[in-house]
Length: 236
Image 1 (cartoon, helix red, strand yellow):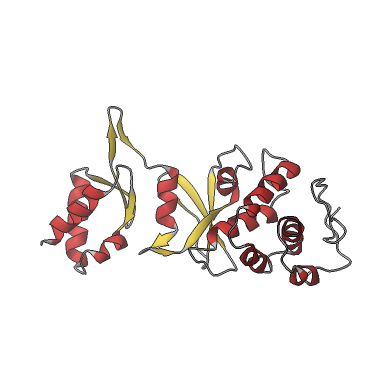
Image 2: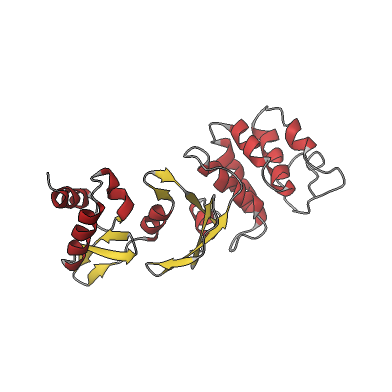
C-alpha cells in the first residue's frame, strides 16, 4: 500500500481536533520524505493544520470556521513521543483537574525529565520544569498529587484546609500508598510531612522512613485543623 494511502487512513481515523506529531507516523512507514510530502499536501488541502514544526491537528470545521484544538489535546501531544511518556502536567492546570481551584491558567506547566525552553503552541504558552523523578505511566498521577501538596500554600482561588481535605480523599483512593510514600522521599520536607500526616490516618504502613527524613528542629506552619497528629509530623 502506498505511503500516501496509509497516512490518509491514519488521519481519517483520528477524531476532529486531534493533535499528532510527524514522529507518530514512523510506525506507518520509514519513508520520511514521502510522509513529509503527504502532510504538506494535506495541509494545503486544509485536511490538517500545522501547529508548529512537526506538530499538526486534524481540522475541526464548523460554520464559524476551523476551530483550534482543545488545550488537553495540545498538552497530550507535548507529553508523549512515539507513545513514550516524556512529561506530565503540573501547576494550576493540574490543580484545576484535581478540584483544588476553579481557575484556568494562561501558562501550562509541564514537568519533564530534561530541561526544555518555554514555547507557545496553538496560542498556549507552555513552561517546562525539570523534574527529579524518572517518569513512568504508573507514577504520573502520584506525582501530580505530590506536586499539589508541595505547593498547597500557593494554590490560587483555594484555601489550604479545603485543598488538604481534597488531596487526602485522593490519596485514600490510591491503589499503592506505599509507592506514594517512596516517591515522597524525593520531595521537600514539608511535602514529606504532609504525606506522612495523611498516610498515618488512612493506612497502617510503616512510615518511619518519612519520620526519619524530617529535621527534629524544623516545624511547618500550615494551620490545617484537619491534621490529627501534628506533633509527630512537625506541623503547626
